[in-house]
Length: 340
Image (cartoon, rainbow, N blue to C red; front, side, top):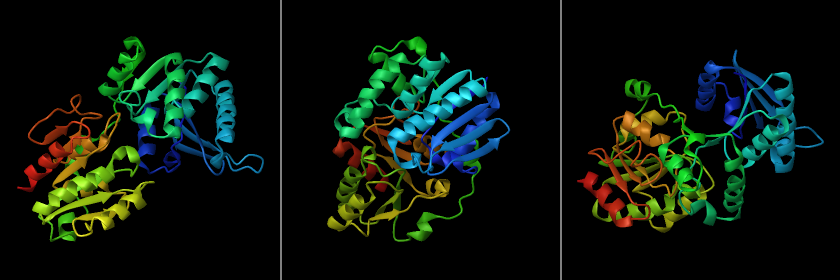
């Protein structure tokens, strides 16, 4: 089957990136044409069956930085592929911007349309109440989701929240983000973070995008209380994003530079996961939580909020503590139980 995917992830343009490798796996089931906005027009064949195309960078309409131009650029390129490549299926990476494009293409061409759900956008009030941009996305999703032919979720939590909103169970399929657990188990770390931070007896790791939904400032405050009784513990935050400056400022304000360290995003997350003592996952909302699955595959303990895979794909155990979202006391107690 020939498929058109509409995405915003420019990392697909990097043939050796993790997301590009996932696209190559998807392409084993049929020919896949992927379109994304970028600062210049590019065409990259990731494999014989996976074809990456970007739109943007022309003088008339710089698609890479303008949402209106992005919309029409992706729409017209998608329409071209549907006509020329005998596209039999359209899929969008989300029910928002790319979802609108996919829905419009489907209405124009009568090609079946699937919307992907990577986040639990309707399982809580976070996206409805976390600013104008997320509120607009929330409303767009309410328009797109019921009009899609099928919905593909990455986890059971998202499926259940959609069913609770009246979406038919028959329209929903679950396809988790693939995690190569055997590769992670065999992986030999390139470094040991305990050797890098020798004064820390116990190292807690927070790994991922520094966005407001990840709730890192809240975690910093919780860990500040922990460190008062456990001076030899360390929280290592590895990642980049819009919240980075705010987090750095908060750490300095609390005088926690010794017990909380920050590093930029890494191309080798498995070395961090394999040499930390425990992964902390304080997100306010998640559709899945791939880093949790990777941490468990690496043999690490996990303390997480009740989001994403929690209480569905992952259940409480000796290595997993699941805490109600916002319960500062329980999260702190779970950390202290590992500090000893």
